[in-house]
Structure formats: C-alpha cells, structure tokens
Image (tube, rainbow, N blue to C red; front, side, top):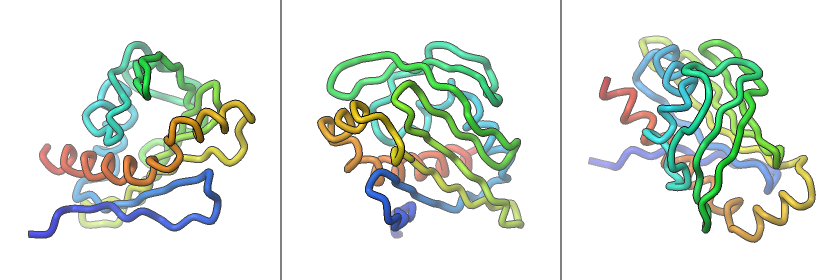
Length: 158
C-alpha cells in the first residue's frame, strides 16, 4: 500500500510555500479542528509546535492565541487571526508578519480539498533574515505536507 502523501504545490515566489491534500471528511469537521488552536499539536508536522498556551476555545477574526514553539531554542509567539470565512478559510500571522492559511473546498460526497499556505513574501528584513538563518523557509513545504497528512489521519479516524 502506498503511503499517503500531500501534494507540494509549485509556487513562483521562494517566500511562499503551499501544499494540498484531499481529506475524506466534511469541510466543517476539518475547519472546526483547525479553528481550535488547542488541536494544532495533533496535526503539526514540523515538530516546532510545543503546545497551545492561550486563546479562545474557537478562533475567529481578530482572535489572538499564543503558542509554545521551538526552532533551535524554545520561545512563545502570539498569533492574530487575519482572515476567517466559516468552514472555508482561516489565516493568522504574528509579529514577524508571515501568514499561515488553510483553505477548504467542499468536493462533495463528504470529501474536502485542504490547501495550507505559508506566505512570507512581504515581511520585514529582520524576519526574512531569521527565516534564512534557521532554514525554516526550505523546510516549510515538507513540514506542511506532513501536517496535512496528519490532519487527514486525524479527521478520517473520527
């Protein structure tokens, strides 16, 4: 049996990464999981997310939520939800200004296409240097693909 894989999308900008997968679950079920920051460690494929430390039970436009992270050293970050379309799209960013987005498209028959995007194309110079120094920008596509595979497994097991 072939391993389940997410598709890493070809994007022209080196500061943007995206991956996509089809999940055999209703879009609302998937969105509810993503919109609960306490659930993010369940599907984090990067290994950088150490846990949810603050925020509302359900995210919404303008909501702030804190995460414990570790990329070389432990730190905490506060994210703000900057886009929110119930059941379809959620995006957040933090002080470095890059965004993480999840877009969901209902394909019918109980399946959903989920696209995760990391966008750092218009960030401050210092943030750009940090991304380069840590190697995160090169790792993001495979981390995102792994996250989507984990999201699929979590949603399809419920």
